[in-house]
Each structure stands twice: as C-alpha cells, then as structure tokens.
Image (tube, rainbow, N blue to C red; front, side, top):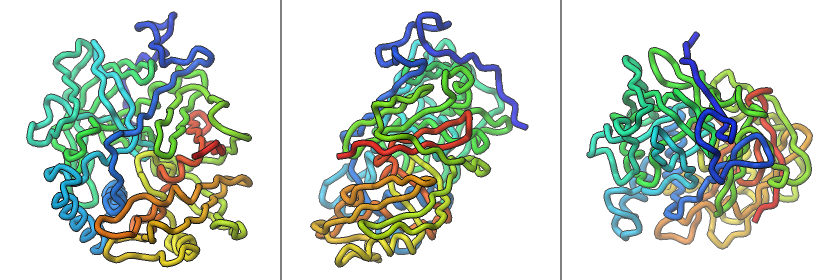
Length: 408
C-alpha cells in the first residue's frame, strides 16, 4: 500500500490554523469556491484537441490525425495566427488560480479530473522548456521541503514525457489549504506542454491510485482535503465560452435546475468512471445502451464509440469523416442537432452549437466537438459534455451527480 505523509488540512476561516479566508470563500456553506477562468487567449484547434486526448491516454496518433496536426501547425505559423514557435499555444480553455508556498505564489493551473498529479513549472525547469509560464520557486517558500528520493514521470502516447522532483508545501485553492501537499516540480517537460504559455501546470483530481510519484505514491489535493470538508465532494460548473466555477465541500443549488441524478463510479482504473444509459440525437427516440466512460475536465472533446458518432453526423448534411482533418467535420453553416446522454433514468442534453468546435484552417468546414473514441480505447465525457451540466464529483460515496442547468 502507498504510504502518505501526515497532512494538516483546514478550511481557511476565522477559526482555522491559517490565515482568514479570502473573499472567494463561501459564507453560507462550509466550503470554498474557485473561479475557472476561461483563457482569453484560448484558440480551439480540432486536430490538436483530439491529438492531446490520444497522447494523454497513451495511444499513438493515427496517420490521418498526425498529418492533420502537422498541417495545422504549418498553416498557423504561415498565416501568423499564433507565434511560430508555439503552434498549439493557449490549448487550455479553463484555468484557476492556485496558491503554493509561504508566502503564497499564485499560479494559473488546469483542473484535471482525468489525472492525479499536481505538477508545476518552476524555477528549476530548464529555461529551454519554459515559454512564458508563471513559475513556482520553492526556494522562496519557507514551507517547502524537498522530498528526497521521490520523483514523478508521465509518459505520453507519442513517447514524450514530463517528470521531475517532488516538494512538500502548502497548497491553497479558493481558501482551502492543505499543508504538506506533494507539489511535483517539472525538470523535463514535453514540447506540447512547453508550448502552452498560459498554463503553469495542472491539479489532478482523479483518484490517488494513478498518481505517478515513486517510490511513495502521493495523495491528490482533493484526497488530502476531503476528510475536513463538510461534504467530501467537489463540483464542476463549466460554461460555454464563459467562466465557470469549482466548489469544494458544498453543492450550490443555484447552479443547476431540477434535481441531481447520481450514478455509481468505477474507480478501478483511477478515473471517475461511470456508465451512461444511452443516447438520442436531435428528436430521435432514446436508444438504450450502456456507454462506459470517464468524466474528464482535462479533455476538451466528447469522445464516444464510432457507431454513435456516425449516427450523430448522419443528421448533418454533408458531415462525415474528414481524412485531411483526422476527424469528423461539417460545413460551418450547418445546423447541428442536440445530443442527449442518459444518466440512470435521467438525461443531459448538449446543445447542437456546442459541437461546432473549431474552424478548419483554409476551409469552410468546422471540426466537430464529438469525435470517435475507438482509437483511444476509452470513452471520454470531456468539456463539451460537462459544459452542458452541473457535475458532482462525490469522493465520499464514490459517485457522480449530473444535473441540467441553464445553458447559452
């Protein structure tokens, strides 16, 4: 069994062991809120988004997709739409402020329910692998301690990797502080992550069983904080083309409509795994079928079996698989149907507009927000799906809650 250090976790409040709660802390609930700010520089790139999913889950890129990513790189650099040295700059759509150390150093990090490492760019990261990111400096934190002998390493599907050393330090999110949290400092960063200058790293919010620190696997921030939360859960309320919110320790009823439907989580693989009860395209009847997948805030697209993807795009005139783009596309002027997925006996409806993900460079076609998961081997309910719902990640009861909400 992994061994974990002794952690002092506290809600930052008047009676806590640390400083008083900042204004972002909730006064009506025993919990805290943090804004998931939409990255104003975010530039959606369909092939790149799908390629990131392949890399994340350790799969090599299909030839069509690899060529599409390379082609997109060349087109963007030749048109000047992004900095030439950063073909996929600003890939992360939502970033949240996280405070690390004493005094606090604030870094914009990506909250990722599909991984379990809290890693950051730092002053120890080689300068050649830093591209404007805000950096964590452990030498300027009186509460930081190097965890001797501990290291971390994440290997991606294309063979690249990121890794480094591990420090123990104070980490605070929205006023929820964890003393002695493992902070994984990057000493080696894959090129794709170096290119994204907007993000200084990520906060893994999946289960600790897939944390990559060795020889002593470490708890996630949420696992360490959970025992001291009024409710052992967090919620994600992401929005289409707008800021969102993560809440820890409470459920804000003003963020959803109707009731929350809960479904069991299978965390045997370390993810927030669950099984949808079926789907419907537009006004078609609901098709009952089990769709096992994961809820992943760190994946942009909705990735489902190819048979379902084909059924969806069959309702869009002229849509289909585009070998040049390495995925499904359609004419940008097309009217897109809604997509409904089942949660037990309820359902979440994704507006058709959410699936118009990105314009393909040099064409009148757009890349779909729904793509095939067949080559990845795992169905992923990413941000396209999560933006259509209010989602409860309940660690205490190991379940997911889904509720409808007002969407624009």
